[in-house]
Image (cartoon, rainbow, N blue to C red; front, side, top):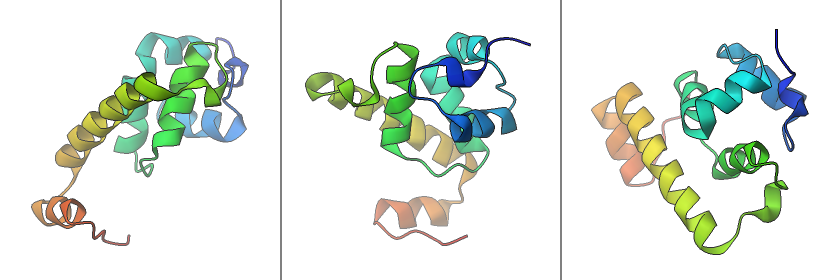
Amino acid sequence: MGTEITSIRNLGPATAQAFGAVGITSAEQLRDLGTDAAYARLLENGTRPHFISYYVIEMGLQGRPWNDCKGAEKAALRARFDALRATVQIAHSSQLEIELDRIGVRLRR
């Protein structure tokens, strides 16, 4: 069964529930996958991308407070998040949606 996801710093019941919906049910699974692969699963399942959620997971996996991410480290995480988001978006979006997102217009679903 494994350790509860909520045992990881910064991660509460809502995050555990979201991960459970994509088959990540233990802290061990989350640690093995890492932030990028786990967050990609959330995005593929329809979770709306949010940078703070992404870095909260990263900080939690490092055992750090969620707001400990600053400066160059935060900029590097933002670059990883943007690349991940673009990859998942391209895989699951139509060309129209990609173009609308590029110009800052989103379709409501």
